[in-house]
Image 1 (tube, rainbow, N blue to C red):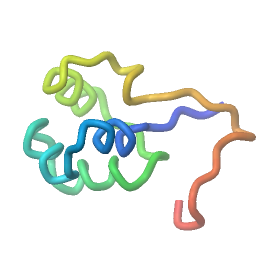
Image 2: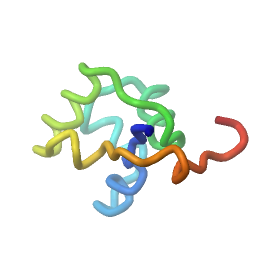
Image 3: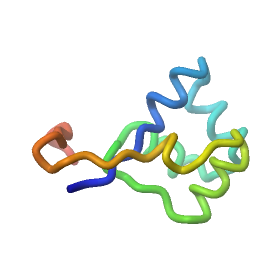
Image 4: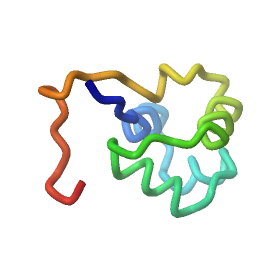
Length: 77
């Protein structure tokens, strides 16, 4: 089993840019872009708290459990 982040889908579904996501959450630029581009990256608890606070969402809206058989990351992950 694996936990993946769905931040790209979350951000895109709201019509936001990765830049705006970063600014609205107050998280570091490198962290924001890494979370946006790499589903395998799981946010630390303080980052998760910042995202949930900024958008009034629960962690389950940006994290998802998938079986290992379903996990398909690009070769650079």
